[in-house]
Length: 308
Image (cartoon, rainbow, N blue to C red; front, side):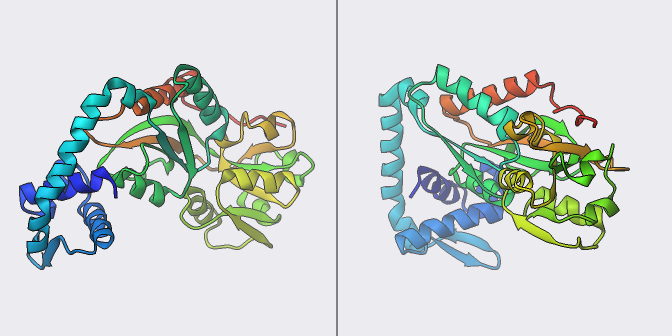
């Protein structure tokens, strides 16, 4: 059980409907409804009466509201008593699609550790939909996600663009594709393809790029990091944002190279997101600022991929 769940149900009680509570909390109504359902399952009580005309508090929910209010008041008193030290030393949870480990995430964590030695940072790899769900429910403080330029940005989050890059083909230096100044879709089809699983932005991009055509052989995996390792071991080629490859230890060591896609002008954006809230812990604000600073140092782009 999380404090955010109790705050959400208190808002539904005060405002009299899920819709009005979702508007005030700046959440989507389905996200709020799912959070309440999770709380109901945990408590074993139906807190809301759901009808076609909307949802209102059930009799059982009304009976429990004084207890919920007591818990929220106790949490507020604890926060005040703990003071700023609580806000600085708490754990910060970051969800990431694993497309920005280098050169963004690792330097940020290193610098953050130097200024926040007692703050734990938990980095969790997940798909974009899972990150959005955890941000909405309070499970993550920050989320690093990819968007294709032109994608709709979900409401309910504060979104900051960190990096702007382009999709590139990632191969070993001894691959036939490494000798090309750029790689066509037909050439990509001629080698084993290491694709991201359904749910990743790069899976959607590659499916669109190949227009339904299938490579001679393909693998699928979760996240850029495993994809790069599979490429380094000679299993095939993968398509990733350039900011996921340029500066990676494998690329710096000469184990991987990347080449642009011929005739493609798609832009991939790395976004930093957090849930809109009146009160954001200081540690989460500081880590957010560290990401923004590091992205500015990188110029907001990983730069063009190296030429052969």
